Length: 258
Ligand code: HBI
Ligand code: FE
View 1: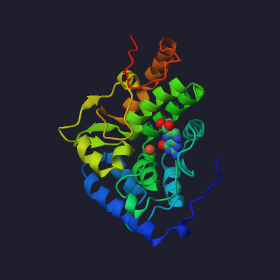
View 2 (view 1 turned 180 degrees about the vertical axis):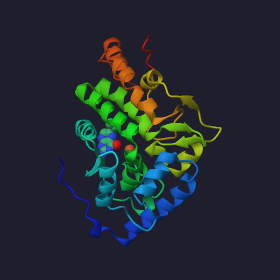
View 3 (view 1 turned 120 degrees about the vertical axis):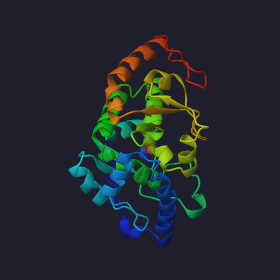
View 4 (view 1 turned 90 degrees about the vertical axis):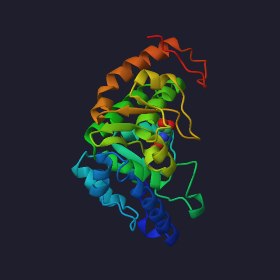
């Protein structure tokens, strides 16, 4: 689709330093905050502070586990391209790293977010099956902005900001949290509002891009995500019948009146 490659030998000293600093900051945090499957995936992909991951190796690991592959993209891509890649078991990733002065915040996801935070979980079968099915639903409604907003909310509160209750405690699997040291600490603190995974509720409310989430949704297993696909499908049909399409979705909560 984009025909781009990761040009590994172009990474600079600063790139390696940025990777090291971001990795060190998150690794120490995530040891007992990230989900077990995320830690396992990181180890399988041999992510470490001294080496910017080489997508060739990540693709070998994925080929042996879920069969997904990484597709190099320049940055944020149109929804249609994005969902088409996911529907074909390809995960889009940038290959550039933020600058030292952007260590704490940058508006567009860089490779640290796309690679460090997203890739380890691509080795988890139920998670990627969910991602693929959700993308197929999105492609069915790709020309309907309202539908893509609703799907975007589901994506946001699972793939980017999802939490999972595991035997050894409440853990993070959402990439938007895993690449943010502040939100990793906040989302597991008593200040955070953690609720059980509920697709209707997620679809009815907007989300914030510029500050910590005012709610997090908790699953018990990744299979919960995959099992929710039929509900998401039905809710999409229902919502798109009852919400007037001229209504640009804004901060007012919707009521699906089920
Ligand atoms: N493009 N490269 C890239 N990465 C994303 O996470 C991404 C995107 N385009 C659209 C998008 N995410 C969001 O609109 C999703 O919620 C669909
Ligand atoms: Fe992301």
